[in-house]
Image (tube, rainbow, N blue to C red; front, side, top):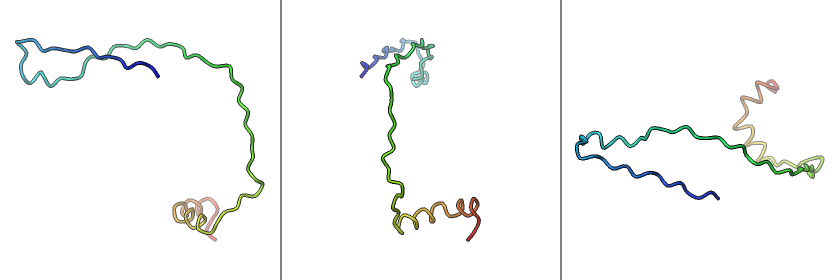
Length: 78
């Protein structure tokens, strides 16, 4: 984890008006961009799901309740 950055403390001068004290936004400085280090890792994707995934009636009811209009639009009303 990167160390926390410390912000500069700003002090108001004695001749500052009170309504200027509420200006908390400091002018943003352009950030320098560094290239990210890329690890040379090879990923392997495996599919270990069964050919047929069992679905319960309760799961079907939830999907139809939330996405019923979308299903009707795609597949037509049945």
